[in-house]
Amino acid sequence: MATANTDKAERLVYTITEAAQMLQISAATAYNLANTGRLPAIRISDRRLIIPRKALDALLETAGKVD
Image (cartoon, rainbow, N blue to C red; front, side, top):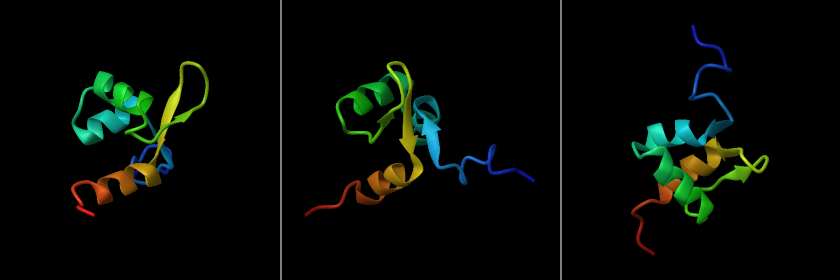
């Protein structure tokens, strides 16, 4: 049985690499999207970005919707 620390579905945040894998894009593309604001990210330090699970969920829910 997976714990909250290892189960990606239960985590609050993901690394850029994890988010890229879930979106089936390259890490480089994920970094570019985060740096341009198209992928919601929180900068923890100069070298560390994390992606909140709720922001990723919201992004996927609104993808493809027409206003």
